Image (cartoon, rainbow, N blue to C red; front, top):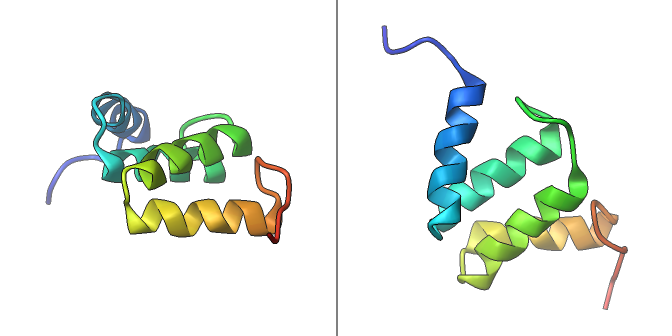
Length: 80
């Protein structure tokens, strides 16, 4: 039932929506970069996308951006 899983197509959809400012899509593309799902793992890009989402007040983006800073994932570790 449903459609066949196609992570590359999903990423294209996420990216199109993320580029248009949809913060949930920004979180989704960030998660793909953080996990290396369908793209080369890139923690700097993951943090960049979480930052865009957080900048719009998206609480999930804010949370994961905090995780990035807490652990130094794609950013310099900062407890301040």
